[in-house]
Amino acid sequence: MLEDRTTAVSPGIPWPTAYPKGYAVVDVETTGLARDDRIISAAVYRLDERGEVQDHWYTLVNPERDPGPVWIHGLTSEVLEGAPLFTDIAEEFSARLDGRVLVAHNAVFDWQMIAREYARAKAEAPVRQRLCTIALSKELGLPLPNHKLETLAAHFGVVQQRAHHALDDARVLAEAFRPSLRAAAAGNVRLPLLECRPLTEWSDTPRIGRQASGGYRPSSWRPSRRRPACPYPNPGRYEDGKPLRQGMRVAFSGDTSIDRELLEDRAAEAGLHVSTSISRLTSLLVTNDPDSGTSKVVKARQFGTPVVDEAAFGQLLRDVAPASEK
Image (cartoon, rainbow, N blue to C red; front, side, top):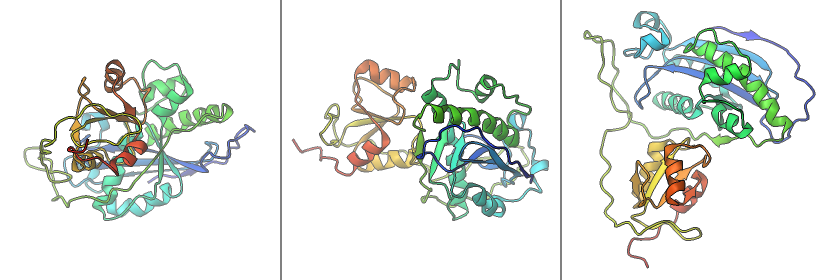
């Protein structure tokens, strides 16, 4: 583990009073991208309300399984063998996150990996809001050709030394976030904050160690199952001001506060048809970033599919009309 403290003073920019009082810039490296994958290293840069670095911290984590794509993160089974388990570092990790907004590049991924690790440890991460630097760069209208971390870093003249190393990625992001935050404050731009809800539904998974074959068979985060087909016919598109109706085809796009699969489960349990794509038959698209330009958002715009955000969808889920109701 590594720590450093600085006391730099930020310029006298008029600061929006509604902005958060502190940030935890986070990066985690993992064994993969699936729901059952594990964290193998984590780094946190703590920043004050104006984006000045207060300290930083880094640790390896023993995933108790194959480390996954070593050619990307460089962490072999031998390197991780003596590292602490997540349960060993959870308290220290919590101290770094507590009372702060979690900041990450593609924050939904980092948050979901962190939330799952805490859930496995029968605990909750002390995080209530997150901020994605991709979403912030869109709010600021930065002229970026793409939304890769190295592109954002280059825009602000930040030099990346070790890509896919959690500590260096967190440093790079912290250095790029500071001018982004100041630009947002100078323009009184709304920060794209999303709620972080701790994961409370999980199933215990067996430990998976290194296997003689050099590979592993991933276990499911929750029991693997095919969602049954929606038993109700599609009543058509959602109309603003009216309730959802059982059988409506609902698709999701982008970052969500609630774990995506849990959100889809709730929709299915309410009698909605959860769709993985957009077509002319789609009743509704749920997205927190309607200007993102994702393929689903673009198709929804082409087809005239109604769009609502996650909060509005949560309200609609409380009162879904029966399929037989006229």
